[in-house]
Length: 335
Image 1 (tube, rainbow, N blue to C red):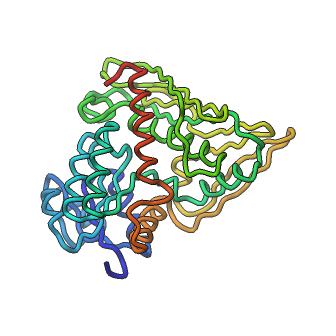
Image 2 (image 1 turned 120 degrees about the horizontal axis):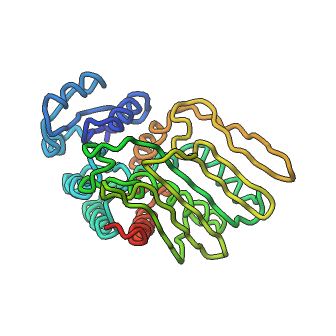
């Protein structure tokens, strides 16, 4: 690998464009190629993001020796296929969440990555942001005493459109897989921090939700019970207006994060609120890079150290998240 890792982008959608723009601002990466099912879309994307090569298939991109790592932003159901093919092509992998559609798919992808000795990371970008690091430090030093209840929400209100992937069951639509995975991931992260661990798996998961005429879960809630008496309420929805935030309640206070998943997206300042003894303290968190720049740099830096997975989002962590999502979906009666 050279001074900068060569990135290949699989897909030309909105999130792929956001990531490509972030690589351009990173110090560790360069854009080598983009692949699409349409050569016209690939070239258009390449021209907009200063990418030297464009391919009309994902397979052609994987055959390019200048592509050292791939960013997979295809629809959810094809994540497993292209993660496995990328691993077989000896490319390091950053795959959008959810890593796959279920626990069995996640196991297959991890097995492929390990067999081919490539780096694999599920793209929960918030894990690499200074705001999350600050939050974990506060939890570990007992800023709110013993953690008792974690509340994580992620909502948006999309007008019903059967052509939109959000409402397409075959494309992995619905809220739980698309955005519910975030509060589940965070709850497991926070619970782990209380015990000095990178994450903690719940001992019990109870899920409920509404499946609409689209055939997908449109709003849903789940209760997670962790060792030590910690509870987590996680909720998500794609057809309702509600707040998107994180609250952590402890024996001595409450921490609130108003932008827990996007972390402000761009470089600048975000804040964590500490409510204690009837007072609210605003703690600013400065970031010198955008959210996805942190993520791209984290992959490159870990690969350079010869590691096969990230300590901030390990493969075992991804397995645990997939297990909880499976249980939540079963609780909703959605398969």
